[in-house]
Image (tube, rainbow, N blue to C red; front, side, top):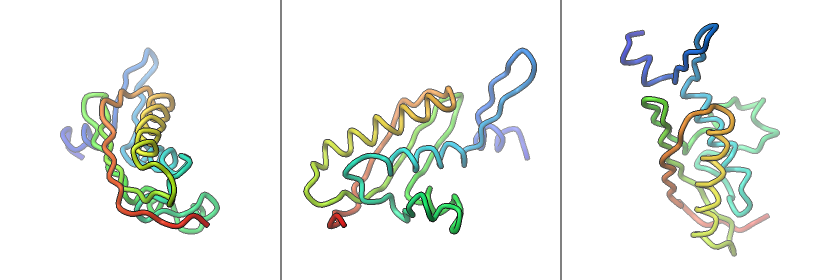
Length: 125
């Protein structure tokens, strides 16, 4: 793996006793989980419930989530469906806040941008 590919695929932080590397897949999964925890989100594109993660794998949960990591900063694009009856602007803002907070808290990376796209409205179960 070349230096350029490594920089795009993982965030690195040098500590006194070694390096900490966070793969882009990990950040993508965190973003997908955080978005699905927001009340009013029906699903991210290609979503599965937490119970099915083990059966279908983590890749399915992160569908509809794109992460761009560069110089310790993370830019996130998320596509999701909103439950009928919820305010799209309010749910979108909550998704942006939750995703940003979870990534920053769990990884220490800065999240200057979380772009959301509402792909549909679904009837709540």
